[in-house]
Image (cartoon, rainbow, N blue to C red; front, side, top):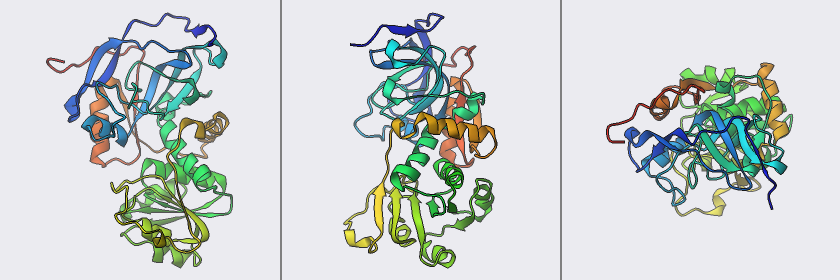
Length: 352
């Protein structure tokens, strides 16, 4: 049985502002509404949201293109940072504690972070302590969890090894490059545009590569035996070529499909070169332990890790702009929404 709850010093309001998708649609489906503050269940934590990143999966949810786990009406948001408002006494999470959370079906089968308050299972809450601004910390949870989990759980990357990141100018790709360099790896990373090679170098990439659909030749010119590990973020349309970039007994980790192709028609295991290992990574919050997040926050504060923030938005009324900018793909990096304690009145649509 859960212990009595630890509640915030100031009583939470009974209503809050949230972005709600009542039906799938375009940007106008993102409506700001006054809704009840979520009631916390035993084993869950209520968080006062300070910032959240905006992600492709939330656009998919808004369009109604997610799987059956997503139901409507829904407050989107698969990640967020803030402070504990209320938690079980035995959770160790005191009111006011800085925390991050991500994944675990938040924003999909239960309401997510596009709100002033959210509730999530305690198992997916990561406490931290930092003086970094919320706009920086808000960019990190999903991006770092995916990048770190792919490099460790997926690839078991070690210092001195070589890594190829395919899809390098994505937020996960840029984050993976900085983490891999911090781990002591040599990094090759791709962009489809020669003009964006500088972004890769700024993230610490040793060898930026222009991806024209075929990389194996370029990689083997630099590493004749192939790289030790490859992180696949582009998808199944290029997976066969990525597999050919890796040395025998090296590993490819399939994490994302930026090009939109998640499956291979008539897949044959014999497309995998002999001795090359293929794995995948989906990941959960537990794959980013608190001590690892603390190390990354310290590295950011010391300037050893770069956070690829594309743009910062202020207030829930700018969520539409954030999703529109993310969809356009014109600004690389993470789009982050910061909530002010003095959140202004909603700019509602007629009839909402």
